[in-house]
Length: 194
Length: 161
Image (cartoon, each protein chain N blue to C red):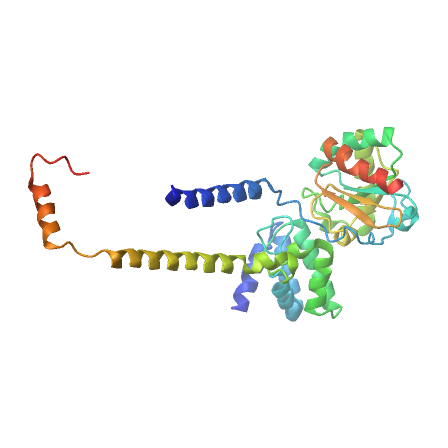
């Protein structure tokens, strides 16, 4: 009896460890930015490219920052949910259009000058929102992805919950699902707005 | 050795055909010291997109951007530690292939050693116990040997287990 007990215990422990390990999502890298102030930026707006937007304008409000691009397939997956959210809730949702032209492998952006790239970005991003619906209060253009780096973006779409003081309270990498929205993001926003 | 690394690096970074490769090669020729430091630093960093590749070996878009960012930090005269801090503050300790020693990483650093020591201890314990049981077995005396022989040669004896 005793002879088999310890190997059995060892085996069960191993199986449990493997089961836990296999169920972890390696994409889910904890962001060091949670609990830190949202990095400042000042970027051109998609709807009014001559105007800039910066996160300081959102101080006093809890809001969502959603990183998206028209070439991003998973963005299409979460998009209807965001459109729905924009319709029924009064959560300010800001879009960060991430590397609209450069991120698209089909385009050789090295042949474009800055003005042409910006024009193309606006055309593509605007067209995509016109087709799929625009849930954003406004979107800003991160043409070269520099702001994305400051926010630690590594897989579009990403969604940040930012509180009234401008502190990042949560980051979600990958498409937002109904479960995550109603189970995590909305309760957190309700708490932040209290 | 370093030259080989550079050649491998350049070969690996040729993502969008020759244009990028040519660009990287031109950069290397223009500023060898910077590029060498870039390779040294980015070999220590994980590419977040293809997580088992280093930043220096990865072809991912983001890896390109981050190499560009590190390159400009080097040109700004930042130290290696500052560049590491730049990356860690954005992507967390996960980007480092050699994570720092702190509360949450103690098990990561010493777990394997601990496991090894435990296994070694268990093995020694087992060997010592076995040695003791072997030592306690004395040889059969004459009487017992005779009985054993008789049993072995007795056709009516029950079959041996």
